[in-house]
Length: 179
Ligand SMILES: CC(C)(COP(=O)(O)OP(=O)(O)OC[C@H]1O[C@@H](n2cnc3c(N)ncnc32)[C@H](O)[C@@H]1OP(=O)(O)O)[C@@H](O)C(=O)NCCC(=O)NCCS
Image (cartoon, rainbow, N blue to C red; front, top):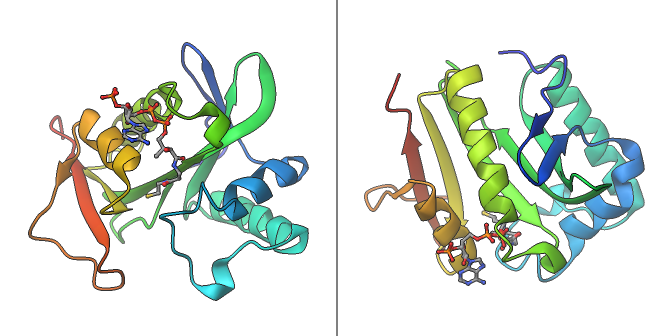
């Protein structure tokens, strides 16, 4: 599993690239805006409240990429390098066959099919380049947009699985049928 060189991805409208320190304003917005974070729960020590926390977070992302622990992409529209959202694969299992997907998008860009386009690329990358067997997603059971996005991309709601750390979460799974 190697994230170096960083795997930039591209689709019709989008370019997915590495998140760098100069993206700090956009990342701080995504991690602290009330609307974006309505359904996202983070422990106190994982919250991004100011630029200091934010730069620390971006440095951690770098470290995770270097050590192949997890990978996050900044989502940009092809005509503008500014980040409008992020998508990541993290929480890899020990055998690197399962990973969790996470995403967020600036509300100005929501409901235009952007995350749908980004998620498709990440699924393809996860299954064909990382040879994952399974991609999981944990999402608040009232997070309609996230649940719809997952279902639209073939993820199945796992009624029999419970998130013991957050009872409001629903767990979704997408299996790699060609593995
Ligand atoms: C979840 C999120 C990334 C979806 O991104 P998006 O680009 O707006 O989603 P898309 O436009 O690709 O839409 C995907 C599907 O969800 C539906 N959808 C989007 N927003 C919706 C909403 N508020 N209510 C109901 N359905 C919604 C779309 O209509 C589409 O389904 P359709 O093709 O059947 O119409 C975005 O809402 C977001 O960033 N939310 C805040 C962060 C978050 O909750 N992240 C998830 C943490 S687990």
